[in-house]
Amino acid sequence: MSGSASLGLEQQLLDHTLGITPMATLARVYVALCQADPAPTEEMRGIEVSGGGYARVAASFTRAGNVASNSATIEFPAAAGSWGTVGYFEIWTAATGGSRQYWGPLVDPSDSTGQAINVATGDILRFSAGTLAVQALDVSLPTDGPWLPLSGGTLSGLVKSYDPADDWLAAEIGWAAAISTNIYSLSPSGQAAGTFGTTSLSGATLGANPCPIGVQAYAFNNWATDTYHPTVWAGYLEARSYPGIYNWTCGYTIGAEVEIVNLMGIDSPPCTPYLLPDPVNLGIVLASGGGAQEYDPPLPTRPASVGMWVCNNGGRFQTGLMFHATGMVGTDGTAATSGTGQAIGMAKGHAIQWFKPDGTHGPKIYSQQVTNPPVDLAFSDGLASFNDAALPLLGVQSGNPASGNTAMLVLTNGSGGIRYDRVSIGAPDSGGAGFRVLRVPN
View 1 (cartoon, one colour):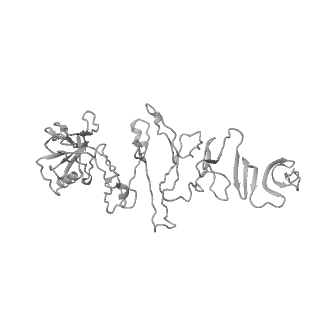
View 2 (cartoon, rainbow, N blue to C red):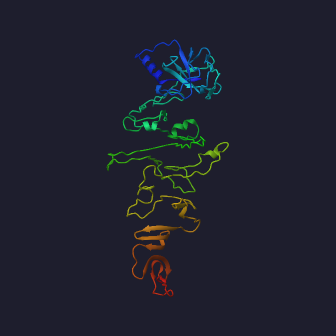
View 3 (cartoon, helix red, strand yellow):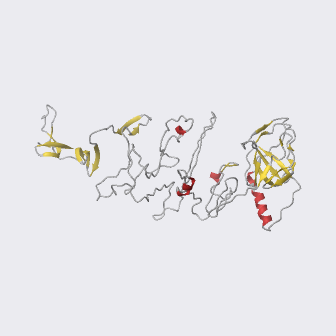
């Protein structure tokens, strides 16, 4: 077993080694057993065993190099009742109360995997000599920033400690009596509370294909239970706007902003639903499957539900999805421009689907085209038309048509050549009793 120093001990070492307050010499220390994972702060100690004849046991230690370990066997009294599941130890300055010095998990010495021991009535738990170890790590850190060692260490820098009396993050950090967030940071100057970054150049010396990831997170929903249905988030972002901050010069509240910057010196090549060129710049990728098919053996993935879900979580959106006027290549959205920019790209058979209030499928718009020129639906001033390239095939104008005319216009190829003509109405009964014909000029 190997342990970590408590925050209280680290503070005493600072006082002692810097001439602030000397540390008292301890004649002996006491080993405790815990049912829950301890943490560095004194406010977050492990849940120590109680009842069933349990008591802390005095221990003596010797040091060799960077490692101090118990010099003799540490044996707890036989359990007079169940002690529950024990998975951690702590080292204290007294048999009861006192100050915690070190803590750590119980591990298998052969492979360092964590061990949880169910101590029942009559069981005796012991540490053989030399198996309860506290090691002083010799970790060399770079000098160009605050870093954590690969094993152990504490977060440094502008870190906000937990204070439920005045901390606005208290509701998110702690639920009831349990602390739910392990690492949290609050910027005291109202700036960035945390910045993470990496570059492919930084990994070039590894001799492998670098794949830099600035921020990475996982959440596995792997607790199968009939009584509780857990929800997991790999990431959660929330931004709030409060009364009094709204004005025309500084009123943005943004839940998340993703920037993609092309500094290649050339335009990024366009993409289609069938081709993702290389190199390419993508603002957001929504992918399903997690690459599980590449595992050995492959994991049997199934289709996910929805790529993006816009919902009401206590407040509505004015608009679900919007594109800025100058956000697309091909148009700036002004009256002076006539080009188009591709806002949404879909493959053959992809549809825009409406649903009826009962949840069943309603109408949809889709394309099954494989060959021939496409037919577009376009809207201009007072006109909706189906176009072959830029040439209208069939159109409908807004407003009331003049007497004898219709609102429909159609592409014709008559004596006057190919042109766009208005469809007019024939004389009464020109199409038979009670019917009129529709007329198009020759």
